[in-house]
Length: 296
Image (cartoon, rainbow, N blue to C red; front, side, top):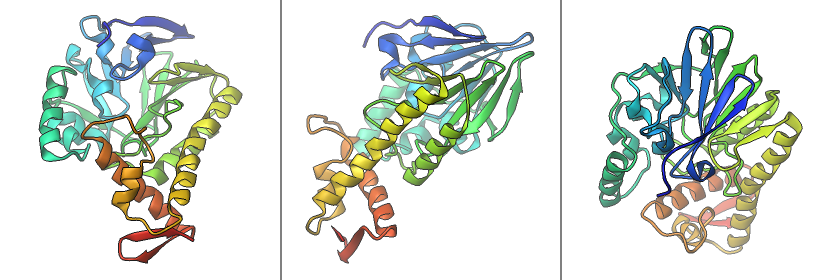
């Protein structure tokens, strides 16, 4: 892994703590927000381990290991959306959410413990969409953006006009909705909601960093949405003859052929099923016989 540590970049009164390797996984970009009465940090990443800035409160966009690896550095109150609360309180629940085979789940449990410092946080409590945290002269408002996980949330920081969109990260990989609790439908609705929020800056959790201006954000969001559309096209092309979900998973919609790991097949199966559901609903795919699907 690259060395820990982060670089500070200021956007008005908001400080982005840019993670190692520009926040690429296993790192992420964290956000520090100071008011006149309180300071909070959003998504303490692996880069904060051993160098975490002080904070009175910690907000977590969603319960994935790369967004909570630095959480062990804080004894402050921790808040997350109610739908991701159980996964933040229990590492075992977090691992269950990945939907891995038993042997892989055991290895992942150890990886989260040993490499990401993930510990149970039974003290964590919930926020909901629209919850406002007043830091004194600066507010942070929760914007629920489900799809990546069911509780995935962004944060609108005012008066700076900074919207942190977390893992709506605008990378060329595209939207990820391969967890057990993920939803393609919810993800697309969240993308539309992001487009409707006018901000000066849009902060992502990974390599793309901070995008300035609603027009530029919309342009990049279009390309990001386009990845989902490309997956639809790839699936429809592959369904020129009847195929099973297992065959679609082997063909792959998400990962390139060289990518290996126990997570690949489960993610590909869930992604295939979610695209199939939508294409069946719109009449573009039909189940020609039990468990076998073809483009109409």
